[in-house]
Image: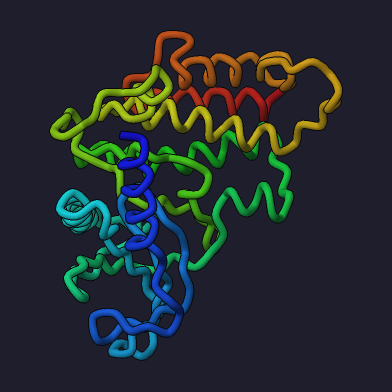
Length: 272
């Protein structure tokens, strides 16, 4: 059985190998570079030869995922068509290339929050971190208002362009309450992140906030490992906010109530 699984993994790695730069997809999209691989797709930055050379993102359904990958890509396209928002990539269409389904979306030229923290070594104060999350939750609240959840709110999926945050990669998103095809959760962490409910995105926003706050943390690498409450110097309002986002205290049920608390904490920080 282990040998069979090994050969399956080797085969999947072979057929899912990224396409080379310069290859043309769908008769018009020239691959400029490979952007990354997710659970169900491979993403490329391409140049649209029929639209004055505009840069676009093309996501190809993983060949190894077969019909499941195609179905999820169609679902992502349908969602983006409904989620028309200036801070969410626009969907331009679907096409077939050599029996592979591909999705074309707007290219958000900017830097991910992951790049800002780890490559540029940007340091975020408590107040700036809270303002970042406040701006992010405005987008998340819109997604929820359309009866969807993102389910993958992470620092690589939040981009900064022209001083504004953008939420990208809706590959795992689904309708609120839609459990069709949802595999059993491997652990409690996965349950909190992947349950198709608003509080899952808020839980992820809590971890997003911690990444921002830890960017300014300068602890002793040789000191015993401690939790965020011991390591970070924060106001009590921010601590309570994080505990509720992480579901350690009664969790927020919607983004609006969390944003209201964020506004109160920010007001206290400004006046204090």
